Length: 201
Image (cartoon, helix red, strand yellow):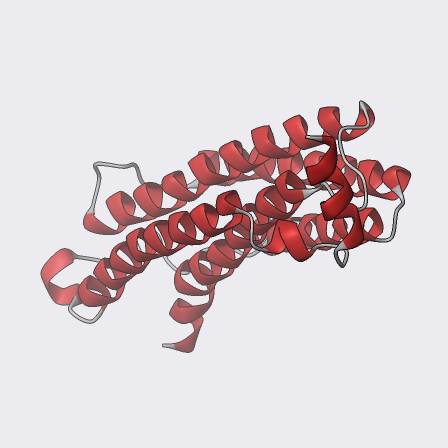
């Protein structure tokens, strides 16, 4: 075991973690989940081009940006914070890692709370129309991914506080950060679909 640690320490920082089996596993998870969201968003656009068949589109008129836009900025800032913390760990700063994860976690929770209020303002329900079904299904799936990401950030934060990571051993940070960035990227697609495309006619 000690020989293995000695060999790892002699390699370039991040060389082992970048190729960690868990990292590759997360890549395949992202491909799978990305395909799920691609199919769901395709369903939205497929129905959107024939609104005469499914009633008003969007249901209730063009969605307001009053909560959605600030919430998008919050989620993007959380991704920046996590990246900043991860980068700090590569440079040997555990305090920067802890700060980045803590900020990302707080912003992720804030996103969930604001999204709840966004849902409460909707004039439709999951079963009221095709639009309502797609809206709550797609944003609901995304919320589930955010919750999973928040749990992951909380676990990484606890591990970081307990000093589990160093400049060589930080594969879980890379893997968890990769998932969180994926969650943010998916939200940009969801946000563009539901809040921007109706404004483009």
